[in-house]
Amino acid sequence: MTEPTTARAGRQLAVVTGASSGIGLELAKQFARHDFDLVLAAEDRELDRAAGEVEALGAQVEAVRVDLADYEGVETLVRRVEGAGRPVTALAINAGVGVGGPFVGGAPLDDHLNVVRLNVASAVHLAYRLLPGMVEQGSGRVLITSSVAASAPGPFQSVYNATKAFLSSFAEAVREELKDSGVTVTSLEPGPTDTEFFERAGMQDTRIAQGPKDDPAEVARQGYEALVSGKDKVVAGSARNKVMEAAGHVTPDPLMAKGHRKMSEPGSGS
Ligand SMILES: NC(=O)c1ccc[n+]([C@@H]2O[C@H](COP(=O)([O-])OP(=O)(O)OC[C@H]3O[C@@H](n4cnc5c(N)ncnc54)[C@H](OP(=O)(O)O)[C@@H]3O)[C@@H](O)[C@H]2O)c1
Image: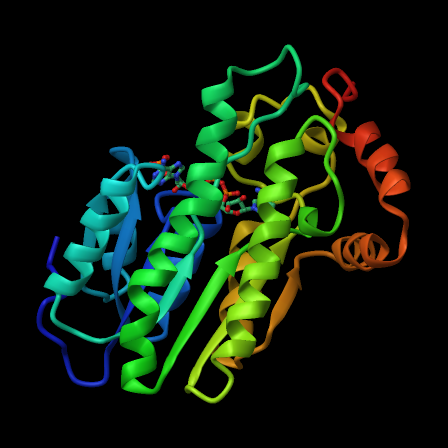
């Protein structure tokens, strides 16, 4: 891997978490195609293969294998980013996992806490560490991968949906605080997308996992474009997602929860 410690003319530096697969890998490819060098983070060995794919697009890439659900893992990533000695001009806080099934009598507590640690704590932690540098330099673009799930309570994904509601609120609030700083914060809100997400969450037997899904490359393209234009959020993927997201803002929560249950209850798939 050629480490992005020396800036080549015209190339900026982007950091992408959860970059080993799915939406994060496709976001990394978007950055590479638009002349960014990259620091990519994920936990497992698959990251090295992903980094190779991104490097083949002409970017210098540093792959950082860390557990971002762990405080020290985030600190390690920050040190590696700082070690590049280059300003970070784009940051995609994307790593995230879900846990399917009932809250009572389902997955062990630590699985739920892991969702909170990764989706919420590590996002806040990384933003807290990297945003000051962007504000100091007077420019920067931040993308936070939330979900259309942010706008609806999610039975059988109860902790996951709540983390996404947190992220959308956090992104919008920090964006407003930074409105005169030259730094923008954009929330990426995909609907069901064809990645490893549902398998990792143990949700293959649900309607939502078996239903139509968007292409992660298209979701990432829309996310990248929203980031560059500094939009507050983008509901990415199909028109169906835009309807779901809009419905979540006008439909009473108990009704949204009932609707979600039909999609996410174990065994709801065929
Ligand atoms: N797929 C969907 O339907 C959907 C819809 C809306 C929003 N999203 C969001 O999109 C984001 C990306 O998910 P995806 O769909 O692309 O799923 P994915 O293919 O499973 O990707 C998840 C990424 O997060 C990384 N990750 C997981 N746990 C980690 C940890 N503890 N430390 C560091 N990295 C970790 C994974 O790397 P390792 O394999 O190395 O752990 C992987 O790179 C998530 O925030 C998810 O909530 C997904």
